[in-house]
Amino acid sequence: MIIEGLKSHGSGNDFLIIDELTTTLTFTEEERENFAKALCNREKLGADGILFVMKSEHADCRMRVFNADGSEASMCGNGLRCVARYANDVLGLDKMIVETMKANLLVEKTEDIYEGIPTFKVEISPVSFNVKDLPLVLAKEQLQNETLPELHDTLLFSALAVPNPHLITLVDSDVLQSDLQEELSTKVNQPNELFPDGVNVSFVKELEPGSIYVRTFERGVGFTNACGTAMSASSLVTCSVGLNALESEISVYNNGGKVKCVVHHDVESQTYSIDLIGNATYEFKVSIEIDLDQPEKFEMLEKEDFELETSLYAKLQDEVQSYLRTKL
Ligand SMILES: N[C@@H](CCC[C@H](N)C(=O)O)C(=O)O
Image 1 (cartoon, rainbow, N blue to C red):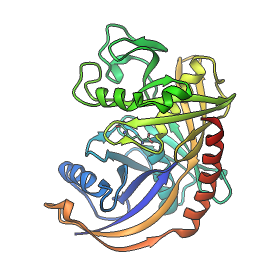
Image 2: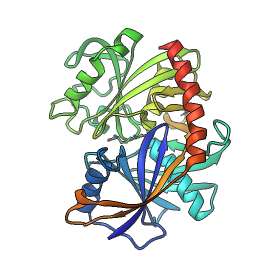
Image 3: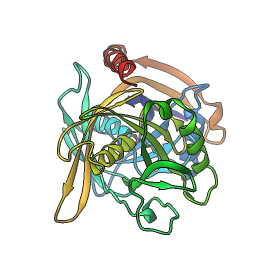
Image 4: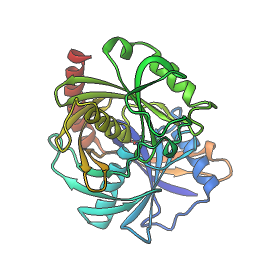
């Protein structure tokens, strides 16, 4: 069969969008998993994940996200911005509700984060600090800015689901430059007793008031340029420890660019939600000939690059990386 894919990225966290919204395409669960494994392989096409954009009975459209290893994730913040842009293009709506595995989320087109860069604001919610929601197997209800001696003696960790699972720690430059993140992340993303479903692990460093840097080892992928849900969860953690303020913009730098996050707290319901604001950039359109029984043998037939927006994004990335060189 031939499928049309749209390669896109949010902060360099890249995805292949497959449209089941305006086409008659549909896949079995096994096909989705196998497509993700085959198409994300960086030796051929390459991506951190696949985003299936689908019809929804409850919302304007639905997003399903599959990691590069074929596992399905409940949420993807950078991916949701890409889906928001795509759905905005095909449905013509600036504001939409997108159904995801655990929540229907508000997405909207917003002011460009940088000249000429299509920018979307997406809702990251629900948020839970209950360890059962990650799951994290621990003999207490929450882990907030505390040690996790089974993992490390001195680092202070926070565990939260947004709703995909995150483990976050604030570190200094020395720790950031060491191999510790890779070592710990590998441990909690192979069969282990703490995180039976694995977890996204972020090391966070304060850059200056209102600005942080986040690097994430993603479950099902490995280190990525950025992880939207991780940057949102990290912003919330920095508010909880008093580094940043609720209801105000936090600049979140990453290896693939920069986003803005605003953490909201509803006092009455005692719930949090986060706005994640950043680019949704198209890289190229591609026609793929793929055999459902042997997806790894797929062929790319035609490819059309989005040169202008890729070059505009490169300018943002240059500025971000030169700023980071002075701060990390
Ligand atoms: N990159 C995504 C998160 C993708 C899912 C994650 N790897 C998981 O398994 O939870 C983001 O931008 O949030």
